[in-house]
Structures are given as C-alpha cells and as structure tokens.
Image 1 (cartoon, rainbow, N blue to C red):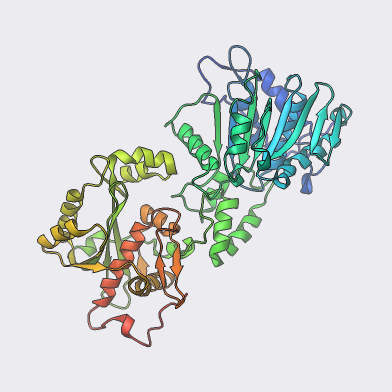
Image 2 (cartoon, rainbow, N blue to C red):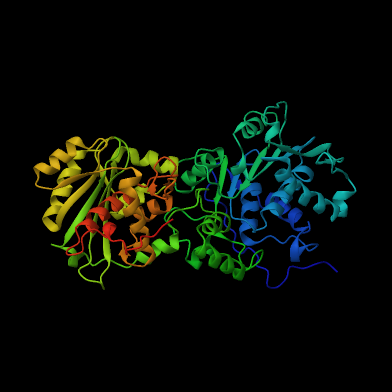
Length: 542
C-alpha cells in the first residue's frame, strides 16, 4: 500500500506564483509538479523521520515550485541562482540533497555536472552523505547509479551525469561545466574563490543551470555570504532588481527582539516538525544565563547575523531598562551629556543621563543620533542595518549632504538646553575643538574626556552594574539597543575595561557617549561625592 502523508503534517494550500516572476515568464505547473513529485518520493535519512517519505513542508514546497515552475518563454528557468538563508535544524541538508539529486536525475540535462560545495570536504560531505543515503533508499535511482564514497561522487548512468563534492581547496581549479550547484554554508567560506570559479562563466555552456545556495547566517560582514545576504534583502525590499536571483531569508533583523517567541516561529518555518518548541525554550534559558550561549542561540536558532565575539551587554540584561520614559517629567531636570563626534560620514551620538532624585528612582538615558542624509541608502545596502526605518520613525536624524553638519547638531543641543538643565557635556577630545568652542559660546560647560582605561573603566563598569541591577531606563531606543549589542570591551592586566571601537563589529558611539555622560553624572550627584572614591562601593569587577 502506498505511503500517504500523515494527517498532522501540513500541506501547501493555495499556492501563488512568486512576486518576482517577470511579465514575460509564466508558471509551468507541470514542471513544478514534476520537481515536487520527485522530491516527495525520496526518503528522509535522519532522526525520527528516517526511512519515511520526504513530504515537503509548505515553505519547502513553495520554494521548489517557485524555482522549478517559474519559466521563461523558451521553457528554461527564470531563476539561475536561489539564495536560501535559514536557521539550523529545519531539514536544510535534506532539502539541499534532494535538489542536488533532482538536478542529477530528473532535470533532463545531458551529461549533468552537479557539484556540492562547502568550505571543506567534511562540510560538503554532509549534504553528499544525505544524498547518498537517499539514493540507496530509492531503488529506481540506485539501479542506475554508481556511488563512490571515497571520492564523494555519484554517477548517473542514464544521462552520463555526476554529482561531485568540492571544497574551498578546489577554488583555484577551472574547467567545470556546471549544470547544477548546491552550495552549503557559504558563510564558512574563507574567501570567494570557489564561489567565483563555480558561478562566473562555468555554466555558460548550459541552457538551464541552477545555483542553489543554502546557508545559515554568518558573523563576517565582509564576506561573500554577507554580500549575497544583502543582495537578497535588497531584492526582497524592492531596493534592487535581478530577475535571475531568487531570494529567501528567514532570520531576525538587527532591530528585532530575539526574546519574543512569536519571532521564533517567524524565522523558523519548520518549528514543530523538524525541531520542537521545547528544545528552543531550553536553549533560550541557557542563552539568558551566558552571553556566549546567547550569541549561539541568536545565530544558529534564529538565523541572526551576530558577531562571533561575545557581546559585553547580554540582551536580557539590557532589556531590563526597556520601560517607557515619561518625557514630560524630565523637563527642567538636571542632566549630564556625553558627546561622541563622528568622522565626516559616520554616526554622531549625543546622550543625556538624568540622575535619580532618590533611592527609588532610576537613571534615565535619552539618546540622539545623526548621520549624513546622502549616506543612508548606501549604509542600508552595505550593512542591512535599518537606518532608513529609524530615520522615518524619528530615532535617527539626518543632516543634509554626505558629511555631518555640525552646525545643525550644535543648534539642536542648544535647543535641548532650553528644555533640560544640562550641567555638563563630556566629549572625546578627537576632532571636537570647533564644536566644543561653539557649545561653550552657547553657555554650556564642556569637559574633555579621555578614552583610555583610567578614564573609561570606572564608568563603564558602573554602567553595566546599573543595567544589571535594573536601575537604568533607556526606553528600548532601537538605535541604542543595536549599539549595545555591538559592544566589545578591552581589558588591561589590572582588570580595567573600556569599550573598543576597533574590535566592536559595528557602531557603538551611543554607548560610549552614555558612559561619558554617566561619569559626569555620578561625579556630581548631590551630597554623595564620587562613588569612585568610596572604598565600600564595590564596583562590579570583570
């Protein structure tokens, strides 16, 4: 009796062709059905599904139908490259293996050359080993095949085709005639050599090639993986067009809340089938206790681009300050400012810190940010950080042109001084002479602030301590939250710490400005003197 789909296993309903279909292309249901049928006659190879039919989940079937069913007038595929970025444990390797086998056995390509590529042979062998087992479990394929495990090759005698594993070591070789490519975990590639060899010109002799790239997010924003990630997001968001490129990205953006379970389902379309929610909850609890586990959870479980460096401020600690700020109550209040000026095309940050009136109140952080208007589109394209959205929401201000307009910022700070009682403004000495002179002329007290360990360590430790104790409120400002997640600290032999811009993966200017403002704030708290002079204070030591 034929095996039927389990009743509790979801099936794609009401399929709609991809919105990236060209007006001159069309959806060929027969071609799409053929690919779906081929894959669903294969067998799972792992865990509780081992040996059972490979029933496609809705997101998988949508992908297969879009890729193989969207064809041009001549019947060839519109999409030559499919980029699929998705988290671990979703059946990624099995889908990649199934597509490799379809390209080898069922794509009607004479002398097919299908390559499985990865950073090293061990990684590339993961998909190959799944494909090998799928062939062994499918008699109709096995009888026309020769499997060479030692050399990681499958030969299809019926069309003289091959499926061959390659690794980054093969990136200096040429002469491939690629009809199909399955590139696994491209974020691990040490360089772009292998990708270029296999995709730039190697398929020119093929009428209907397909490059299928499937990967999790990475941690290197200067890589071929992030280049493809950015291209995919640009196409998805309408900032770029490439009718040959099919983009799929299931992952958290920089400004999305990784602690919200609703987001887990959004980025993990296989949740509840290939991975259980309880497993994610267990991993989440571990992530809340350890910054290193947080990085791993956000990266592998939620497919978020994060730094490989452990974040200094774990998100769950920073989130303790998310409560809303009563802006009216701050008017006329004493506060202290921190000013971190940018280079001409970078972010400028100005942060006010309001000290508590009594032991029951909390410190309040009020940040302001500026970038040159003309640089915003390029920033979004290069980094996928939503500067444009933040500007539209009022969390980020822009000055005209492609360089920072300091006069605009000076006027803005002057206006702030009419709303709040700004006692002092601490500033980084670098490049700040003209602005500090202007601010002094407006009546502000400005104080130079060194960026070395001796100046930065006490307020940096105190900043973390206040966050950890839940005694600091920042209102969940998204730009400051993003910067908090980027912070990396340097430590000297004496145990002093400071935020390092050199090693931090992205912008941290707002946190640096907040730390400088906090220092001036604490030094001038009424009737307490400096907490740094109190031997019983017990500053948090790292």
